[in-house]
Length: 121
Image (cartoon, rainbow, N blue to C red; front, side, top):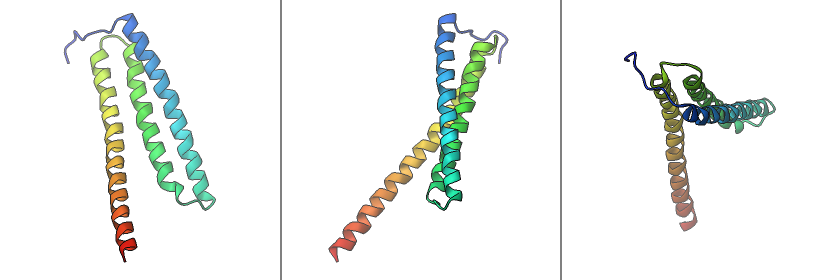
């Protein structure tokens, strides 16, 4: 990019810092929850494996995005580059959530069709 990147104002940096901090805490919670799920798998609750892995991936992506938002505030001369990196991490995060929702809808619809067909017998 060019050497003359846009720099956010102190007020804008304050908003970005607050966002980065909140995202970081949400990410830590997601990571911790994922670890708890995985620990329960070791005790025989195998249904928690998928949830644990998903929570860890979502936490990881949220933490990465928060770091780029924090870099906007902590550095000078690269605000737009850091913003676009944060947006890329958010795009990954929401792409995963989007496809998980699509999969859930498919499972519910298929389950409903199977249930209706079973009851119709």
